[in-house]
Amino acid sequence: MRLIKTKDYAEASAVAAEIMAAQIILKPDSVIGLATGSTPCGMYANLVKKYQNGLDFSAVTTVNLDEYVGLPEEHEQSYRKFMNDNLFNHVNIKPENTHLPNGMAADPEAECVAYEQLINSLGGIDMQLLGIGHNGHIGFNEPSDHFVCDTNCITLTARTIEANSRFFDSPDDVPRRALSMGIRTILRAKRILLLITSEEKAEILKKAVYGPVTPQVPASILQLHPDVTVVADAGALSAL
Ligand code: GLP
Image (cartoon, rainbow, N blue to C red; front, top):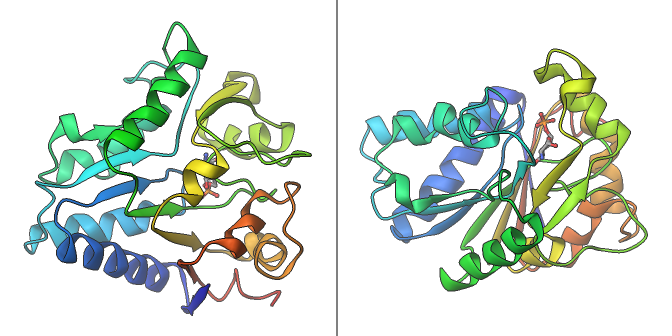
């Protein structure tokens, strides 16, 4: 695991975008795993600038980590809308090459199987971007007594519902379930880029990087992956 220390959110966003851009330049037809949340917004803004300066997304394929169950694509808080607004609508990626689990699927279990098959059919993920929840979740893989392996339908914890309620009118409006790549899906990515910023993530970064590998802190499993780059700002590093 490589840890890149940056001074603040702006620098962390720029460094993460550099790493992602390098991946795309070296392998223009990369399969990139993407994440949502407030943390990667700055990184996406940097990637849009890089596109305006010549970075080519035309052969890139993306697969997102997760999507809420029950939110149509056009809903303000769907992750599809987030990705369109923050990245896809501003670069030359082909819309048909952008994938998220379908949170409106009539049969969520079948959708999970299909999403896993889609990732396999693409030849796997070259680089997976991750953020981290306050409780150590990656994607929507919540703390548990076991690691969930494949893409699956997850019931969100009260902590995650509360954390994500800032995007909705009230906590009651936050969907209770989400479809998320599983831990094995994530760990199969050839390279992983974990972006973590702000002091409120300091304790969980310490647990994830230096604590025991445990499903109670899902991100701790990243210690076992051979190619993880953590980009953190001074706030997130403040407990180390
Ligand atoms: C959500 C997403 C995660 C993300 C997390 C942290 O729950 N499913 O992929 O890492 O939020 O979000 P933020 O960056 O806003 O703290």
